Every structure is written in structure tokens, then in C-alpha cells.
Image 1 (cartoon, rainbow over the protein chains, first blue to last red):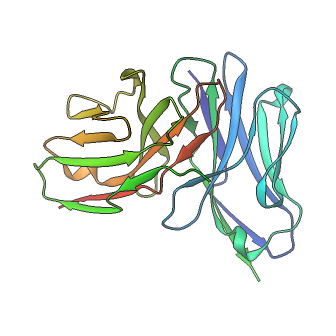
Image 2: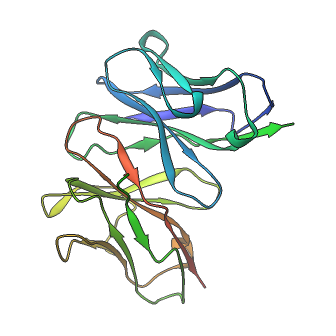
Length: 114
Length: 114
């Protein structure tokens, strides 16, 4: 079975600073990896995904993530935080199987300080 | 951009009563899902549905739960004999068939059992 671990349930960054959210996965077969963002009282919005093409994936809102198989990681970064980035971020994994079930990490809540 | 629509957005139900949560997935998607998020916890997989039958379900999805696609557009989650611990945000999602296909999530139904 697959699993995802997000290091740090809360991250605080200053506006304009680097955002780094850590995600490590466990899977016995090649994974598909996703980052979702959840704004308060809203659903889950896809930021980006890795599906075995380029290991550096660019997403919406200036975010990107790099798949590192040797480290079983898929960390999310943004060079310069904006106040609108305050939200909860979820890393998720699925594998090629019937149903394409997503397994989520525990989430990281990002606070952006002015 | 196509959306997954969930109704109602909020539902308050007395313990022991039955509740039906409704979803309209994206029309050309083939996989449908229900996830839940208990307040402060991670998003958990409940069930996936493909070709008019359940393709996978979690251990959470016991006999208390059922899903149905009563017509060509709606996808419902029924919870019988609700318990206090069923209080959560319930998300519907749909995806295309391709492995690694992105999900589109609805905005969720906040279910409160009193």
C-alpha cells in the first residue's frame, strides 16, 4: 500500500520568502504524485502533478515540485510567498491500478506573515 | 472549466437519521469517488465507483454507507443511522480513466451530526 508523509503540520513564512513544503512517499510501484491546495471553506484544487514525465513539475500560482526517486520525495516550492498563498497544502499519491485511489498526507498549513 | 457540484453545502442531521449527499461529476469522467475529512485530520478515501459498481472501498466504508448513480448525472452517498463521528466534510471527486489522471474535487458538504 502507498503512504505519504508531510513533514511539518504548520509552516510560517514571510511574504516574499521561499516556500518549501516537504513530502515523502512510500510505494512499491512507480507512483503518481500530486499537490493539492485547500483554501478556507473550499474544496481541493490541483496545484501540480507528476506522472513519470519530467521530474521537475511546474504548477499554478508559481509553484513547482521535483520528483526525486532516490529520496522518495516530492517537495513543493515557491520562490516568493504571497499573502494569497495562505492555505492548507496536501501531498497525495496514487498508483496505476483500478480506481486510481488517492492517498493523502496529513497536510501542511501555511501562514504568510507580512 | 468543468466543475464537480455537491449539494447541500451544509447539512445538519440528528443522530440515527439517514442522510444523502449528492454530487454531479464532470460528464465525461468515468471514475467517481467519495472522500471525507474530519475536522483537523487528513483527507481519507471512502470509495471509488466505476462502470456502475464499486471498484474499491476503504475499511471506513462499512454497511452504514452506500453509493449510487441513480441516473446519468448524479452520484450519491447515503449514510444510514448516522453517528456523531460521521461529522466531517465529505468531498466528491471524478477523474478520467487514464492512470495518474487528475481528480476534480467538489467544494464539499459539511455534515454535522447532532
